[in-house]
Length: 391
Ligand SMILES: *Cc1c(COP(=O)(O)O)cnc(C)c1O
Image (cartoon, rainbow, N blue to C red; front, side, top):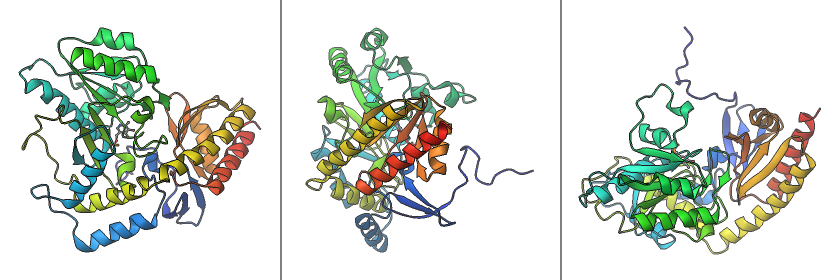
């Protein structure tokens, strides 16, 4: 028998990376790649960012873990910064996106049930959404492929079409507790919600007394050119899930909420052994040091504008390979006419990492720190790849 010691739940590329610097990765064989996948929107500041490395090393010498039975100064610092820069009043720390979503769902149920509305537990979700791989998260996401073999589905999720406010309104019942949506669907294929849709969901939540949850696990932490994607729509949720970019490559998740939504999350209602440990908080605070520094997000927006201008003309030039480009900031989806996995394999062969997504899309999720060299290199690799795909 030849069964992999690493459970083969991923179809992996046969590449082993040894080190990284900025947007560049080097394999054990010395091949260099331009990393426009960022480990699926995680390494927002690229690899081996000097500030992240020194902060993490400094913390590693002092203290790694204590559990949440004690105060953790890094948590208090990070929570204060997340609150100061968002709609939220309070933060729960965990280790991944799925856990952040679990916390969001638990806050929403408890909000109603602690007030005596024991029948309120259902959550309206959007088709094409992705919220992680726990049993509740795959049930919320509702993708048959991810649910296959894992029945029964966790009860309490009602799916509607992404972008359709009428369907959302019709799905609301006496049992509805909350709605959850990604401001830009990531795994679903970089599908942005319109401003009107997000505003409409906010209005529905207010009208029916529901909690509005934004899943910003992928869109958060500067990915779209603002610290949080909801800022583009000028709409605030009651609860928000964060993870991917938050630790810059260290596993950190967070669930943010208003005081109102989280008022029943008292001692004993939720927990995590690892969540928010001193090492994780050092990484996330280092990421925040950079992202919140004056001018940093302006630089991201400027770099994104350059990249977008070049990608838009590339897509026009190669209209037999690409159908369109969509997304925001450094969260870019190339909808393909050729099969997306074939396109991304060709781009990989030419030295650049991308991430396939739903709806036949190839995702470009570069570090926020890219400059002209990376932008020009990416465009020339994409151009070469598209040419080769036509021959
Ligand atoms: C990646 C992702 C998740 C799940 O995060 P994990 O850290 O893999 O659990 C949840 N929601 C969205 C929008 C994501 O992109």
